[in-house]
Length: 255
Image (tube, rainbow, N blue to C red; front, top):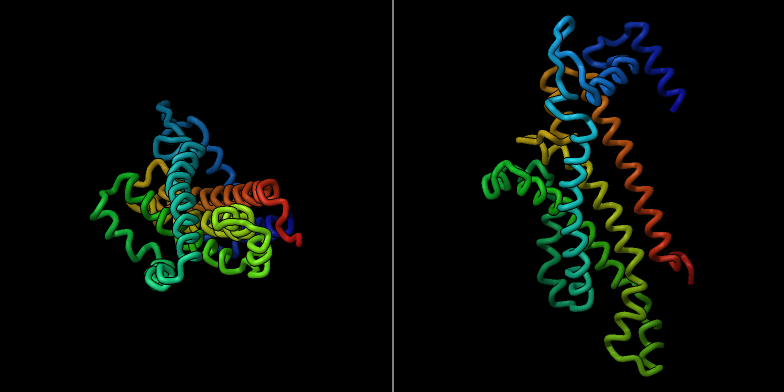
């Protein structure tokens, strides 16, 4: 990271790239500070403004996190339920899987306009978009988890007198849980890559909306600051999910 920052600073200090296209690390840091403080609306003007677009940067980030929590949270509830049902009942899997794969292949920008028509430009359409981005990954991971349960494990517990409920709770669910968590981890990543698309319209406050709006206003330092914040937040969330996975499924990778 230090080498990358040094190279970035050297390129911008030498003037090899116009600041409009690649501002210096110092300019990005200044934009980050301004976005988190009260500051004059213009040099020499006494009137102060709050952060960027009337909100501090952390408020933009919090708004996006709330939308992602709602969308991905709904996917975490619905995805495993449908995935277990499809994994355990083959006719349902045959019926639903083509539609699930079709949805997974669609880029978010392909249906954001339709969601706005259906649900308006408020948070509802944004949450639906994030849900649809996260839902297929979790569902498919759950299906794969169910299908990967060793048959001899199921036969072994049945030979010991386990009923269907006990097979599900004692064998299928524990074996599938690591795959579900992997799907959730992938889904959160999808949601973060979708947040800018979700916040293209009426996305303020929102870190994706701020990145898009600052880009249209040629405020490249603030755009890069938003990108850096999104990336760091995604890394932190991924680390948290991995930590939760270690606590929730300590048997992962152990026979």
